[in-house]
Length: 200
Image (cartoon, rainbow, N blue to C red; front, side):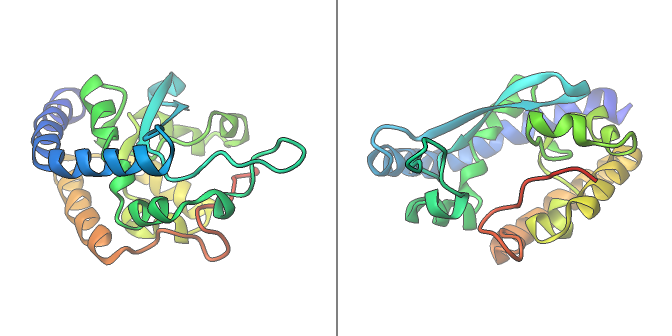
């Protein structure tokens, strides 16, 4: 019953309250990024959601679009701006995803929506992460975020799918607040963000 009805109700209530409370921060970050990124404050990208249905995720833009001489985007650490680094460390780049929650593409809690190109690389067990809506935060995020391996991350995601409940979601939201304040697990051990998943 919780997953079918009350989870969506919780998403709507909390997302509306958070957008109202964070509106001054939202506006401040928006204006700062409009100046720093020459009119580009948001980042949009297609991601797989519930049952692998594609949607557009919305985030504050933390990287520029600089490319090498061959026209390829530079590595993440080379494109991450000073402002972008700050909003990543403080998780402010995630605020616009509250709009995704209101629309219904995402939930507050669930496996993080990853790249479409990863879908063919999942094994059957890992594909279960798409049996629930993706979340702004999740069990993997409060248990290491980008500091853990892909295999660990997917194991946490599937565990969440199989154990989703109101109390678990409340626990994850509370733990997320603590992680954000401590700025833990933002980067992997070898990269400014998270290395690409290349299969099992």
